[in-house]
Length: 157
Image (cartoon, rainbow, N blue to C red; front, side):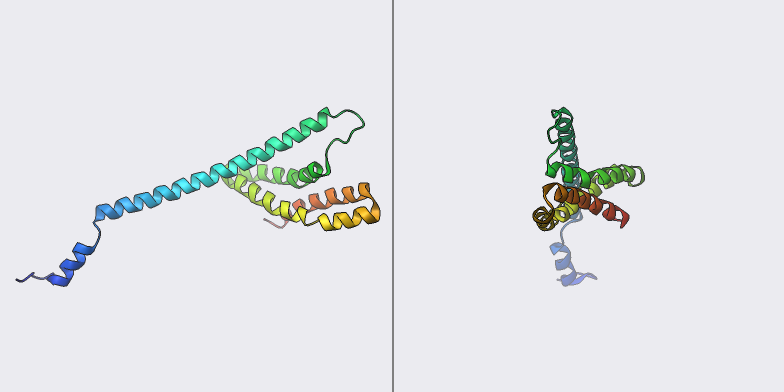
């Protein structure tokens, strides 16, 4: 039996190839999964930003309601504010230039990176507590953490 111009190998290859419709469904599923993944990542980033803003608001509310003569904020709160305040200003600027999604993604990434860097200042803070006292060491730590943010922004990150 003759198969004409196509020949047996070509017919076998065509039969083995998935149909165009099946390929289209597979591509659609890949696009759907990619889109779903992007939406999930975006929502996660938005949740992180909103949680950070809520915590900052709660800290400020506690500080405002603290009785006179008490410490307004813990060292952790002051360091967090020193790191995040410049980032919030930069994120607001980036919303205008890059859009809200890009600015929020940048804010989350910057906060994560700078949080680790601020934590790495702890050995020096402890050394300064022993050498210079608690108050001086805390002042240094807050200032150094804030400087990390300013340098990060100035470096073009």
